[in-house]
Length: 305
Length: 258
Image (cartoon, rainbow over all chains, first blue to last red; front, side, top):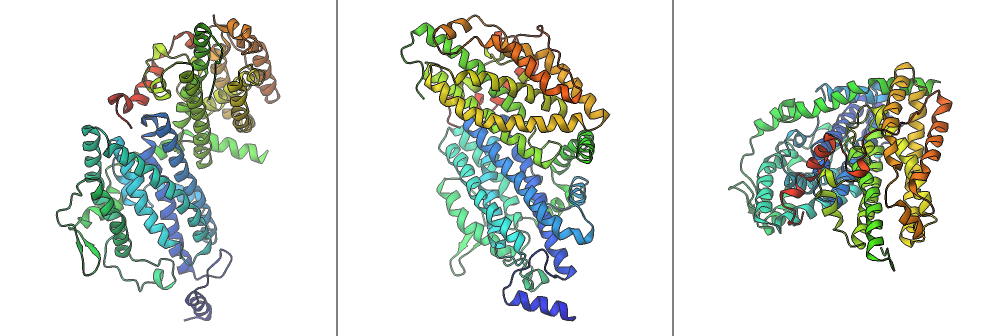
């Protein structure tokens, strides 16, 4: 092992944080970059299912709230792409390259944003449970060794907590509503349950990989999933909703929730771009890029003038 | 917010009509603005237009609240429960977003109109209008600044951008008279001390301000007085589509809590 790498790993082992200008091994830089770009892509793609409901939100208060939430998600994407830009600069990769990769279907983003959101209840479930799942992951990443990412995550987590309230409020309102509203909510939960289990990735990955040794990540997929289940299963059950998994039960000895096989083949298919709405949502971004190439060209000319 | 104290029923009805007109403008434009979210040319503009949309929709909510205080229906019923024939917004704000140049030009022209009409409120005998003017004008300053930046960027951004912008201004000009169309009840608002002068009297100043704003970039603004009268309920089919979309969930059960 060369001296630089040894020093770097010693720094990490002492609990020190890595700043953008510090020395870091290329492999560390690449791993951070992959994680951070996937997060940025997910924030951007995550805005799309809810965006579809901005025009249809029922009530001025709801319309304002969902607009503000989608704006936050896109704002998060913007902030995270900036962190990624700094990391990517030595590789000669720009933000435009990252966006192009996403739009052309070459980049990864979270599986959940590939599913349709056919009713208003889906908006509530997304804002409450998908954002709840995201907060679980992002909360664990606050301890990441890459300091610029940790700083941005602190702000993002604070905003996500507000989104959770917004989602919970929609869910509680529907749960206390008419029979049709409750049925809509139950259907939405049934649609999202499996994608939510998939959200954290497959179990069984080791925590002895570089990503853990370098403290880029600090919690395993299964630990995050269990954290989510511990928080939300009781809340969902208290609302009288049925979780569509007959095998779901609490193992008293370990404190873990046991769940039925969520079909990991489906997870891999979606991650590789086979999600129901992946093509449609990416084509929206592609259409935006194609329609606005003249605007981007105009801005370049204006700022060059 | 308290409004219309000491006014008789007829005058309260006039005031409702006036406020509803403004609220409808803000509601429909706010909805159009929100359609840009996640489709704008830049991520920064997704965020900026979402912010502007929230301002306009929040203004609509406040104004509908005044309508309610004057004896009208609740803000959500007013926003989600009316058909196009009941809407009083200017046709300008219901036009589909079109290209980026059209959206930028329309917003800039609308914001200047809004600036002139909210400036009237500063001299209103109604405390509610003076209070609203403070808030709305603070936010509108940012909208105007945003619009100016884009007018300049597109005007100086090469042939295609400048052509698109001029074409957009032509289309906006053709619809803009609706914003200051003389309406039967205007005089009563002036006589009651609610407005310092009839809003339609602002038309000349409005046109001059836009022309002065765009002239440095070699652009023109040539309004016509024809065009459909949204203020009198004459709307395009696109408004019906917009309202049907906006009301899709709410109207599925207007009695339910959403």
